[in-house]
Image (tube, rainbow, N blue to C red; front, side):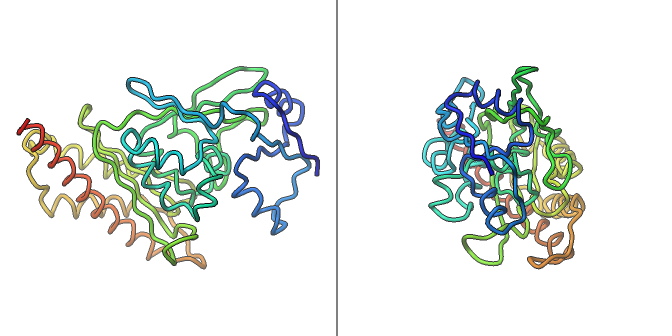
Length: 296
């Protein structure tokens, strides 16, 4: 196994163009596990740790450009206000040591349905910035990024450079079920984001289908219920019947399997519970913000 260490982004793109089978490694929190258990034996490893741009972020007027290698710890410490859903998801990633090394680019590159960042990325409606030496930059909407179990939309010569996420314009939440409290792969996970400016709702479900997915029927139902009931304007409590229907539709969006971590039946049930609870948390936060705005 050859170990390549480009000193710049341009060198990394050139190496990937010359050796398309080279496996990128930054935090290495997924790749090294596969190598150590002999589940993967790449001919080349492409170390991206010397490329400083990948570990930087930029907060704009409406979006955050998050470098692919920005550690989860930095997201938690510095971007909680702009990216609350992703910050909450970052808290659940493994151990402090791994949170200090791993980043969103690794989750996207591996495209495991159990990756903790995926539900928050789907709920935010972000875009993934990728680049190749031959074709330049392209932006992939997150809804088009996941193609199958551990398969993504990257071409063989492309690398993930950053993720462009809209700054939160409303409350966001994340919930995860695991077999223990820490250092655990999700049995299932759920993310939700309220977008008051467009009066829409987005969700993300992890580890309950072959790829991370959105509960689109649940989103459409809830957005319509909030609009028709005047809830966006009044900030009134959501009726239990609406929350129940939202949870059922979220559960129905799942296509899980039975495995050592949980049964398909349990995953569907748990996603419904998480959908109802996270909706309650986000709506209470929205109501609190509305009351504060009225008082001001």
